[in-house]
Length: 334
Image (cartoon, rainbow, N blue to C red):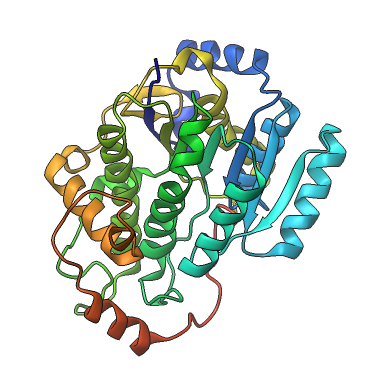
């Protein structure tokens, strides 16, 4: 019988020293697990936690597809991982989560070229951006952190189901605790831009998306979870932090003990309850429907029914803002 597994994970460095017995048990299980024959897609895998996640999974024998915007850095990272792990099946592919066109091209390539997708790790992310817009006119953080991964996941769902039991892992943050979904102005067009609040909204959206996905795929056999944000930019503990920061994603991707678990939120490697607003099923449903309209999934009949899309408004927004002024800085290696 097929089972759909959905998780949510949140990572903060200070918690690394908490609940040691649970963490040590999880790590012991993690170190023993290998994934030969499994294909893993990791977004934002050319640097930081994404790169370390790709490295750890390659070390366990997986076929790794690294989806990144900067192909020069991605090719270099893939080559480095192949050299360190002696795993030749590590590949660099172009993926710009700030472009619906790029996401669709990447997903189509995966569907055409890969026999299976066992794990999708939605790792890439941006934070504290200026008031930038994506190629399609979305606020950059909401567009990349939520809409980009929402679209990618939906486009790859059939492939994931065919590869069952499979999992999807979404990265979130404790920032979701102070997040609020503003359905009247998701893209910050009618109010003063606040980059911190925009980021928190995108992280709350990650949790709501995961929970709604679990609900819609109940009884199926693909999984998803949310893993948190770690500062990676400076400091003598940088490499240590990155290595530890990748452990929750790797654990949720490979742990056999989590098979059959669905719709859960994890704080590092311990199941916890997310913020109250992340448990609102009505908000989660509305966000799914709004996201579907924005990225054009509803028109293709790939998602559930909802009210007619405000297509004219979205087109006008995209024309007004045009191209993104430049790449955002990503702590997760976009």
